[in-house]
Image 1: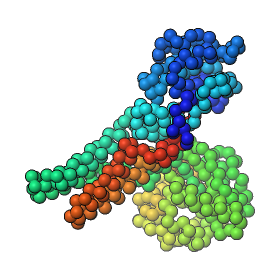
Image 2 (image 1 turned 45 degrees about the vertical axis):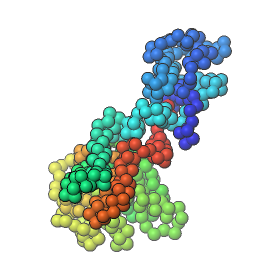
Image 3 (image 1 turned 90 degrees about the vertical axis):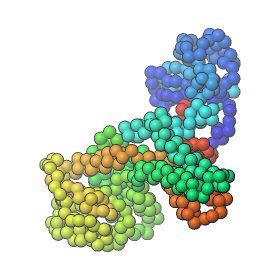
Image 4 (image 1 turned 120 degrees about the vertical axis):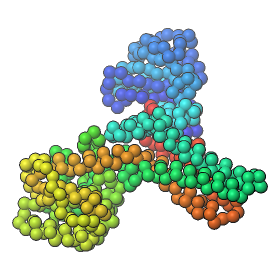
Length: 492
């Protein structure tokens, strides 16, 4: 991302660049003097006022290119602190491209990279790193919850919690320095009391943030529903049923799905990535083996994990392969075949053998959701047994007399609402740093109780402080900025 170090004048379409729209907005930024752009307009730009809208024509020599409305924002009182000219043009994609090329080919403007306008706002201190991350979340939100947390970051609400952590750190650091510089004045007993109290406050602040992180937190931004199972388990049939279309190829030939297939599906107010994976088995086929490897990787990272079992084709090796995965739903297929209930009873015993069970495996009953029996992909049992009864896999079993699509949608939506109601922290950078801060502070606390060398203690505390500074954006390594701006769209 060379643009991180570039001050060139830039231009980009901020809206409507991918398809025809009534109006598109083209932004120009980073120019030193607006009079340098006079040749592109049929009015004199020298005397225009900031933040006023003007109607005029864009011209290329003697040819009228478009009739537009523009607004001029003089830096530093602009979005990114630079001079910005916003052009509202007719939104045909060819017209947008023609206007951008006019400025690029006939002046020193270059096309902006994704997120470059916002990066300059960060560099010029118009936005904090928190606000940039909030804007990223806001622009890429797939649910009202993500949208809400994006606004929370953008408005600085979440930052208050992090600022409280930073203040607790500064308070403890002051106590350490006080014990070094004024030890004889305040005495050993008072010094120890201040150290203990300030450390307790710091650890409490860290623990409060740690409680807002759980295994599913980062998956709330772009949540996945992943189907996994042996070949011919019925995953592709279920995938098509949830989508209400024949998206995946269905066949009784093992290994038909060799790579994962993903489609967007809306459940409640949230968009999920529904993924059908390759059947998990030993395979000598290189392509199929890679698909199976990807399937296992996806299921481990997924927000909602569904295990589809064909009770007529299963193996202990298969359960052994999956025993460390926390499934949300176990779904038995081929319920139309004779001997289905007997085979399911056998598998239930295997589940008890390979997974930790808390309480009875038998489910409690739903009220009726529907009366449709949709054949072989349907399970036989009623209602969820859920995480409270099957602890390690958090599994649920549902009934063939119920509409399987509605049952799954209700279970997925219920989990999403439950996780998101706990005010989780969902940005991966924040989660990683809070976990690191928690570990470092724990090590530091142990050191403080056993180490007498104050220089060693101070050095370890500075390491904790550096992580906290990185969390709240005082320190912004280049790789962090790269990761953030990789998600931005062009023109923002």
